[in-house]
Structures are given as structure tokens and as C-alpha cells.
Image (cartoon, rainbow, N blue to C red; front, side, top):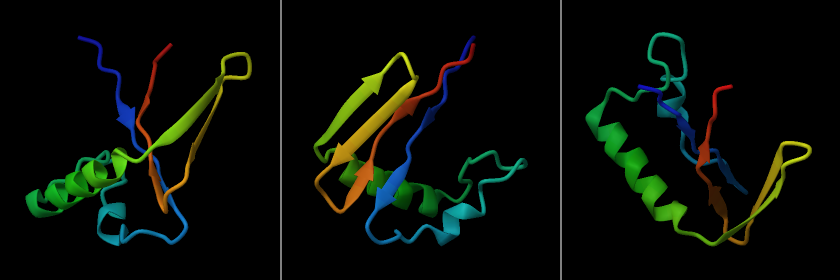
Length: 83
């Protein structure tokens, strides 16, 4: 079964409180947040900010995507493809 992972880059004018989750970005944890409380807090943050309006411009020729938003924080899902 092929799995296409998703990445949710988060950009903001001020850096969000992401210190506790940075520790899971390593080869052992592979980005999987094992703490149930922290995982729930991250999910709530993503839900709260994923609904903000954003515009997406794709340039297939250059394989580039530009995402813009008017809010303070931008969260956008990117589906990765393996070739």
C-alpha cells in the first residue's frame, strides 16, 4: 500500500510556540508526536488555523507553488508525491 505523506508548513509574523514539537523532528521519531496531550494541542492549532482563507498559485513548469494569506498565521497542506 502506497502512502503519500502530507506536510503542513506553518508560517507566521511571530514564531508560534513550537519548541516542544521540534524535538520530534528526528530520525527516531520521524515527526510522530508520541505525547497524547501535545498531539491534541497541535491538532487543535492546525484546525483553528487551517480554515483561514489562502490563495494558491501553482507553476507546474517550474514545479513551484506560492501560497498567500491575509491572516497572522498561514497553515497549508502539501501532499508529497514519490516518483
